[in-house]
Image 1 (cartoon, rainbow, N blue to C red):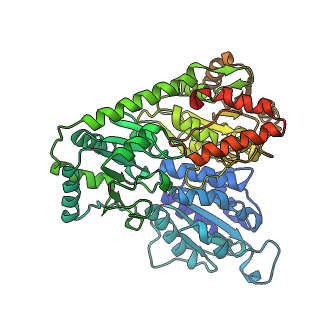
Image 2: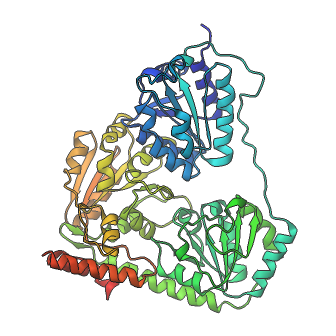
Image 3: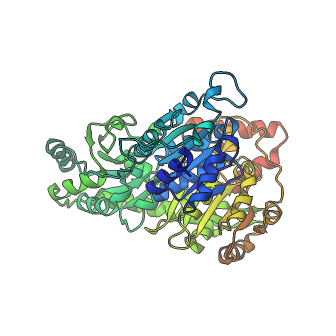
Length: 575
């Protein structure tokens, strides 16, 4: 039997290193599904919702370098969009197969017709639709090359009638080239960098995900110039460990130490970061930025010197030019502040809360204690990001994934699916909010179907916690943020997952231990304190005024008990 286009597509995906396709099959996608079945070495992961498939593919791509998802005509591939936005903004190399209606029906307002070019244009780096057998292999090769080397999403529109046509041989390459290059700034730029380091003694290094592979060089540089090392959330697992000069994160989820150090510096070195929160950046010091993508230089801070290069290659070239600094007074002072901050953070762990009001900080710290040294964590957007960023510590082997750039709800559980399939044998722990988990409950069945030993920890605060805080800071009484939840442990059990519910702080550790030791998937539903707040590293007067105004409105509306609960839950921050 002659090879058809669907067979050729699957063959090229396998040769590129794709291990599985996350999808819901149907109509225009059925020939691809059948080609996967016949080929035999690639899996078809039947997710319950295409958005979950896109998130899972994004997670796998971040861990293993390349992944694939697919959606069928119209509604099927439309469901991919949110997960693809997240993958593209996270720099995750994902191939998305958007199968669609038969090509001869294009432009006729046919059933389930969409314009895939318009639809995926804003969430992809490559986006084309093949309508002839000769186009498909050329487009797919270009798509894979783009996804890998530009790091993002590549979409191939695939009409259903094309998949059953005979494959065509082409004269250009169908293989994938994973070439790598060393990228270093010019000698003049490096000398300018060296000169600035020599002129200043109060130096902070701030690292983003682009510095992830330069851990050892960053530690060496910070020791040579007596600089503190701060980092973004995405970079934490790669930068924090084995780093005696680290001082934590800044930003909305960060801590005062990093914010203070950056604002007390006379030189700030930005390495591989596109940190978006400009209010957290200092404006009255010299700033050097190093990035592999030169178009990012200066778009987040008032940069004095911008260098084009990979962080690792740049620091390798820079280190031999640096003379050891002797003055370490700034470094010692900032580390002392960091030690005090960590001590204050520990007070929330030492006070675990009470029945139905378990402190989430205590829960996250216990997870950190019990998790394996190479665990993979996924965190839902919102308060779970706060507790994960502050209380889950790096070991050099752990990974943490989230919707850090796109900020979508409901990402943790489907990302855990991708992580578990990409890294079998490693512990995968999903830190889920009750709001996030509620949005994607159906894919608990996917976890059961593929026997994935994922551990889902639900921080059940019966509310949209981060939204509630946003409203209060803005001076608004929280409205329609409360959640009427099912018993998530019973839901899990109905799906074939071992379920636990914890209402008392004394039961947290035992439930987590049992869940982590259980051989299959487990869900731990923990009733956390809905009034626990995430205080940012710098509190503006307007935020204080907004919170006070919000509390006043609650009092006037007869919700005095809630005001008192908020104060009690956060007295360590507020007083």
